[in-house]
Image (cartoon, rainbow, N blue to C red; front, side):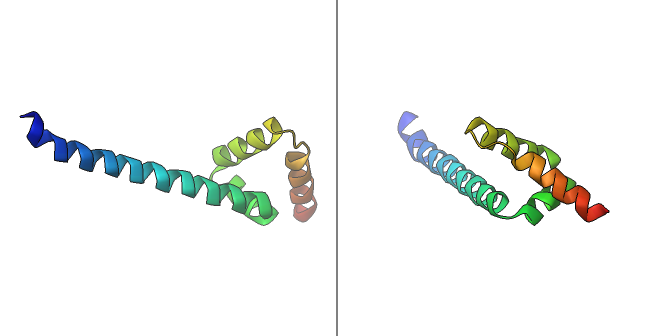
Length: 80
């Protein structure tokens, strides 16, 4: 019984590993896009505000402050 489950376990492991790699790569691409484009961050604030909040907290934790405030100032200026 154990020998017949071994190929199935390998396939499941490879599938989970591939899903993890795709997820990490996707998170990296999303972070890079948000880090380089204030307009994209504004789009994210309208569609996925919780993702933008995670972005702000991660950069503040790394020691970069003022990005959130700069975004809010620009977005308020563009509304007026």
